[in-house]
Image 1 (cartoon, helix red, strand yellow):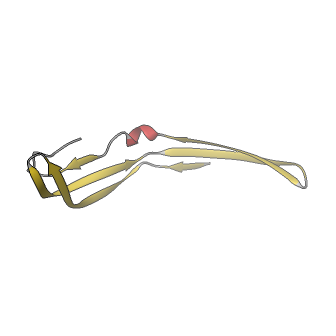
Image 2: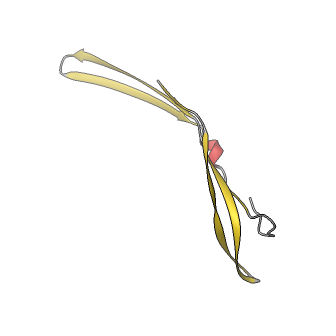
Image 3: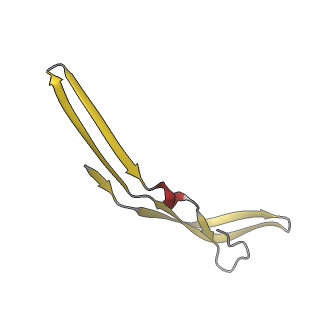
Length: 79
């Protein structure tokens, strides 16, 4: 049995924006949320030379619906 808790990775840097008003570069940050998951398996040997195994894993992929980019003081803040 394995459980992996949710975690996030934070990014910071410059983002180049191309809009109808022209190009600009703004300081921005983003946080990518990774989902929790749980897994388990079972194996047995009906005979010495044969092993049968089954595994099941559930991952909460709903947490990866979007990536929010935040640029402080910019009209480009989007979700």
